[in-house]
Image (tube, rainbow, N blue to C red; front, side, top):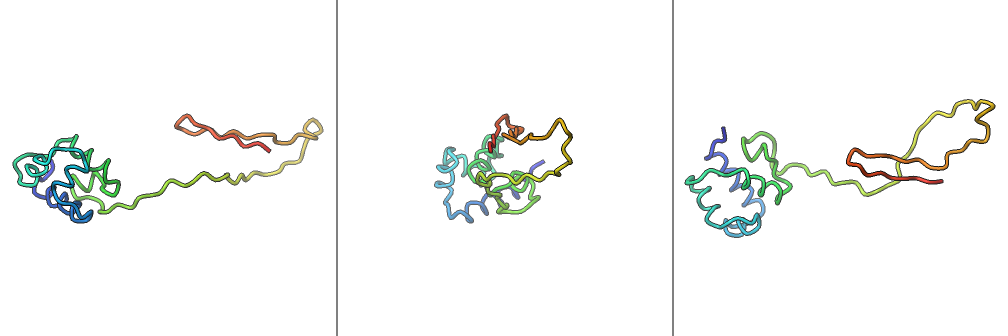
Length: 121
């Protein structure tokens, strides 16, 4: 169960950290300004949609921290690495008579999201 008073304290901390008034915060997460006012005053509890809008807009807000105070704020954001050619490590084995003259022409790496990279010599 989310403690609404603690939730509003953490929400205010996010607004202060980003130097936003309640009105600007509402505009930034695309909710009505009255929604912020009602949540901060304790009149309304935050909806799941509201919480997701906060965490999707502000990547430094961890949903677990926002809901129950577990974790840290701001959370560390791991930047996606830019594309680089991976370093391949493999053992060279003694070639059999049938394998003489075989050379790698291309390597294809398949990722879990369905994409792939192809490396050609």
